[in-house]
Length: 169
Length: 239
Figure 1 (tube, rainbow over the protein chains, first blue to last red):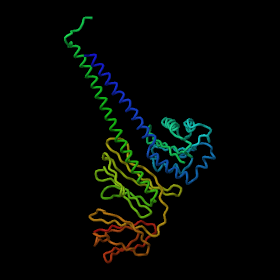
Figure 2: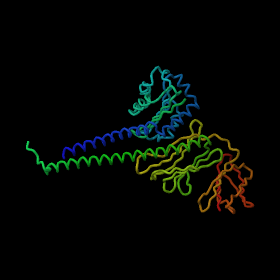
Figure 3: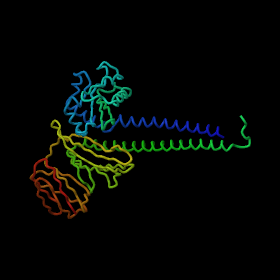
Figure 4: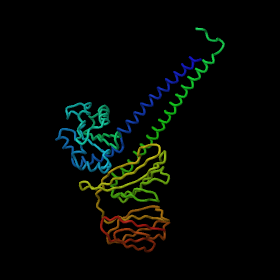
């Protein structure tokens, strides 16, 4: 009887642990959706894009030859994002990067995106989650379909960052 | 080793097997409960995030297509609300019902899975490089999650030229606003407003503008307004 109990229990345990593992994978997918396709970050990106178009910052992107940290370079965009976050809370910040979609402009492949965009912020070092996000989008974007990207990082608190990449044709 | 009793089971064997069975059963039940909780949380989060996206989409579509002229935070039917004014004269209210379970924005309504315990609205105006912006915030939090399912958007004010002054007419009874309409009144001229069916005898109760006079004749309501172009004027008409 002992042997039967053990055998049946092992079978049932194996089935439920497999279900639990599958659910963990599903939870990770939900977490990815929540963090990497954040709605608030999406509308921030859209608002920033309107300012980029209005002021023709794409010309600067071509002349500079490197990605632009929009929230650092242009005061209008910096003031715009300060209307959304609490500018007196040092844990809240928004970083927005403007980059051509065609990586050949920078002489690299899309998989080198993390190296291209990391350490561009003179105000602070990159969050680890930002580098992870860049690795994620370098594997999930087909850059040939677009003209430029605006990558937004919305930090609501320490270790609580949300991202969105606006892909513009 | 000595063979066990062929006719049945040893007591020790039964106790041992039962103990193992109960321990494994407890583990499996705990696992099942955790699975169920995780699924419920994921479902609720997904539904509320989807609702958030739909609500913002509705508001932003109007802002882009109808050109936002003004946004104010105010009370509507005794609940906090945000009042949107568009260039075509349309006005919409964004508010939650008394249970905080249904959001109403103009004709659009969204019923949530769970009620919200923490609801607040705020509107702020900013000028950035000569462009006026509205920051519109709605906070929606519930006891089931730390997430905020409201929105926080900054949108530019539409650049429109008004021919005259906007006057908002609120048709009210017993302090409840039944409907609103917006008219353009040209400074120095009369505006005659027809009284709708069922509102015969309605009179102007209160009018708030920079400068104003008003009079009613023949069942219609007449406004005569002298003020600064661009002022927003509100009149409460009561039965």
